[in-house]
Image 1 (spheres, rainbow, N blue to C red):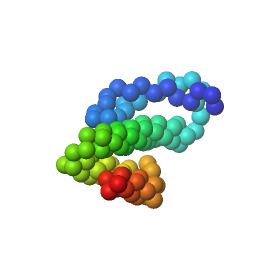
Image 2 (image 1 turned 135 degrees about the horizontal axis):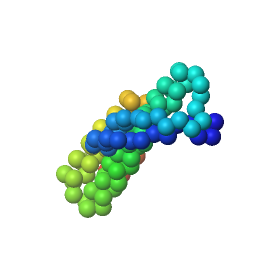
Image 3 (image 1 turned 90 degrees about the vertical axis):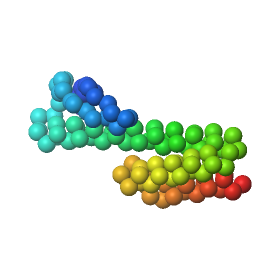
Length: 112
């Protein structure tokens, strides 16, 4: 299937997109469950993309705080990034071990 469904994102709240999907059918599966699955996959793709973007932003904020060399900002940025990594792991966006590895790498940078 080359073109599956076209999705229109109508509302976005705080980088976690609530999608109201209008199905403009081009070449779509005939089976109802396959259509539903396509919608579910698109929703989770958008959610995962948003969470991964937040992870990168938190990591960059930590790096910026590290560059400023302010202990309070570094600690706050580390807590924020750590929280985001744990949340992403709990949602299944990244693996639990990957989240722990990233947090460990950030902690090493603090102690270096």
